[in-house]
Image 1 (tube, helix red, strand yellow):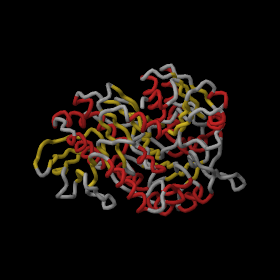
Image 2: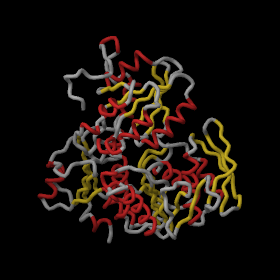
Image 3: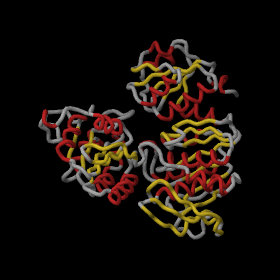
Image 4: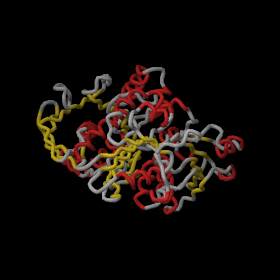
Length: 468
């Protein structure tokens, strides 16, 4: 079935178009000749780019926005009673989830590479895109973040489709056809969607087993390779692709790749963090499974310079360096804190915004354990996304569990704290997958709130104030 037939016509409206994945899909449909429109609750950089490309975007949700649409695509972040979604269903307009559209798009390509895992999907997908670019193949990349060179969408043809495969609501199982499935790692996350951890792990494994080939992490004890697997790792001596002779300089690693025990190349990463060795190995193995040239693969990996919000240096505030990272799971936070401590020259300040109440509630003990070791910690109010308020899983509940942490509920409070606390040579690490990134940038631009001299704050709201 053609994409036009699937979507019932050429006029497609996106609800929640400002999300990085949704905006990438909107760009793809525009490139394919569709008339695209969209809406979202607030303006951001993705929406600015879409409008510049000619896609009209409405801020706020109005039922009239769907009039004239042949199909509606919605993100998982919106509620079932969203005004536009309800109106579309009332009018009999076909409605598709983001994942349903992504699956339909993938069917137009000769080969599909889908990257799954609890952590690192965006970086590994971006590395794969750089490899395909340097290999000279025609491909389209749907990236869940903004690569420094390729952004969240790149297209030169339909030989390969490269995408992330998200485990939320078992979405990764909706792909109709996958050539290579990559399984980076397995950790507790999105547990509100799963019976237990075994159910989560089995879902990843089923996703891999359905593909023609899979590429899986041999060093992760929670990853059980299916029969079609190529394995990668550092510690495992029997994996198909192994990194050896690791050498670190400024937290950036160089390593030699063994392909089934044979030394075939040396790679020097341009991004910091040992975890990127695993991302590079996964991308290397996926590329080799298609027979791509080793030299082109190395050039691709070494051309990767990072993704926005992945240990991104965003600017300097009163002489302190601001670094933003997407880490929102305890395992990711622990790795990022370790990297930040090694790179920080002065004092380290940490600002963490929890992403969804359910994740915080399910992993509360792990968040407390990891964040209790953070210096000068501020917990910022929860980014709720699709969820309703839950006191037990709130940022304030997390703050109450962590001794010596502060709590901030507004950008003004946070900026005032920064103005009175940081000094030249310090590092401020902003962690989270919500809007904390944009708040950090607003503080850098002087738009985060009033100067500290105008307000007296403790970074904790008064008892009478509703917390979140």
